[in-house]
Image (cartoon, rainbow, N blue to C red; front, side, top):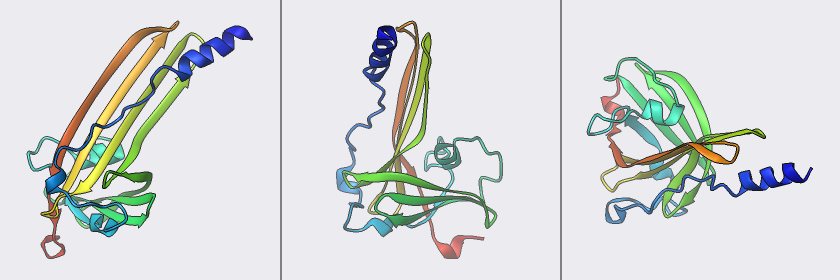
Length: 178
């Protein structure tokens, strides 16, 4: 029984986090906290302004091959801890998710994915954090941080972490939607 307690404590204190760094574009973004949380409502282009990042993959954890031109993501503020994310293609809603999160430094932050597999010999966890905000020009700004860690008998077997900050996605006006 003492060994189980020791292994549990080792797993507990093994730094299971993927904390996002402080946003660097403070002067360009709106404060969404309690002042203007509905500013997040709107439809946004699926591809980032630099065409490197896909909102479908970031928000819905799946690679969806479809028409990039008529693909959108719609965000709706529900309350201070929930937002709705909808995947739209050609005007048809393909999938909708409600995410639980909180406002941190004027941006909405939530865990996209959290997987913990605690076994006696092998431990694995995956944390994927996403932070979203609105720029003063109305576009969506997204920060993402992911961390994967695996232990084998309390020794690191796999430890990988990466982050992408300041991904900008254009707001789509309703009259431009087909």
